[in-house]
Length: 287
Length: 144
Image (cartoon, one colour):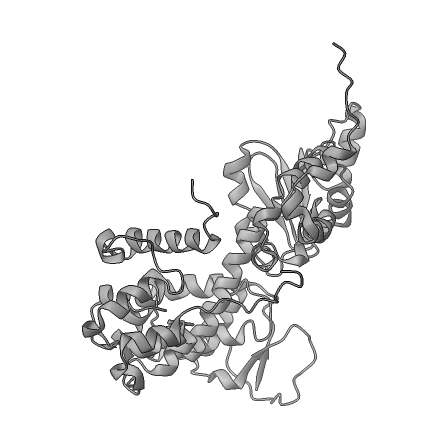
């Protein structure tokens, strides 16, 4: 049994997989583990450092599939990829198709990853930082944050998979030359107007900047959201499919949703906004 | 003005028909030949398949991709995946479960290398009765 640690990096895994494949090492003899300590079934067989005799040829599209599926966080994150690679390089192309047992798992992961990227694009809320009047203060703060300049917009997001680096490129086109930063529990990205800087470990200062930002228009958005929430067309099951509950806590309107759903169930579908309008103070019109 | 509001399911059926027209190559008169509305209890694709039983069951290992996409419960994406898969090996019944087809609907209309539908001989009326969406049972009103 060979235990490898690729530090959750695709390029490292790729080098390791190439080496394993060249020595024709079976997938069931390899496992990837983050921990340093040896596996129970670890053996001391030594393999040479350089590449072995077997020359694998795989289609280019497989590489893209593996690279995308590698962003999935879960059990057997890397060993499944090696198994797919092994089967395809030994002439069994069904391993990369969705109809196959292994391939369907690969495609399930691909779908989860692309869906998580969609969640990032859909549920990220950038908050504009106040333009600080004291320039001295600004530079100190920026230095503290390990940035040249402070971002104009910050956001906090909790993705389930390692999609931040690739999926956040979407915002470069959307936000032009604005500077923005996205912090997550794991990693963080900062766009300084020129290039995207990715930190594998989100610095604490970045995290606190993103989590403590105060949205000046927050109240307005909550009012707007609770008014466009259409009780007549509410379908809670579909809603939770599109907007999973794990995102509610980071969305400003999240705490409002349960109340809005229960209001819709207890008669708001009939009365609409009648109650809120009744609560308003009327105007006296004098003739 | 109609006396009662149309059921929300009517809108759903219209969207389904819209997708069939735009991506599946159906013609409007195939989906709605006579006067009247689309059926509410079965989707338009199933309705078409039940009217054209002579085209089914289809052998997934041989059929034209355009015809596979017309099987109820099998969509465009699944069709592409089936075509990719059958280039490598023959399609078996369990592949369809993995591709997450709506097998309850697809079953009477498909043949794979290890499956032949029992319902191939049942009449369309009987199949429609088996496959139609049943409304959720409703609690009766107390003071009706």
